Length: 138
Image (cartoon, rainbow, N blue to C red; front, side):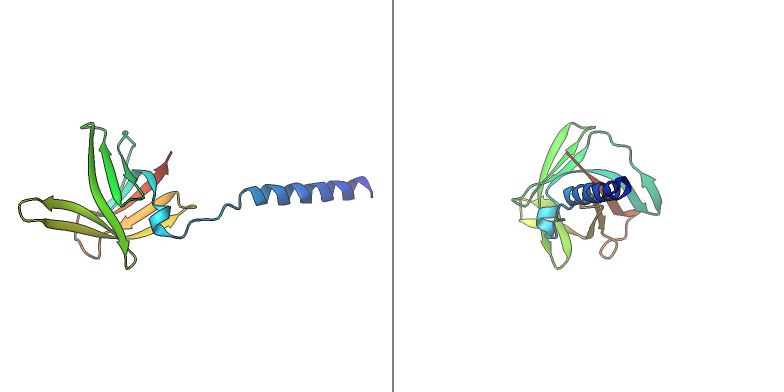
């Protein structure tokens, strides 16, 4: 085997080994893919606003609990969420006196190997900003 052939062979082996390390399967179940902490990085609607991280985050837990940490107020708020009919449903208000619940529906899309979450409430709500882009954090 001449040196050039050896080099090609070794490069091929290294390329195969390197590509196999990155072949981690991407979670397709949204209830599992959403788990973890997310920061808001962009809002869209009447224009696009890039958001500078300030320490605030949303965390989705596997028991259907969503924690929202507001770094400005240093306050943690809890609510519940679930997936149904290709939508992410988040309870936005609960009134104890009569048990009334208000829910917000979002279309959702995971991208960049589930590290980006885009939620869109525009089919159900007319708001100044109705599309939110979040990035997964550790």
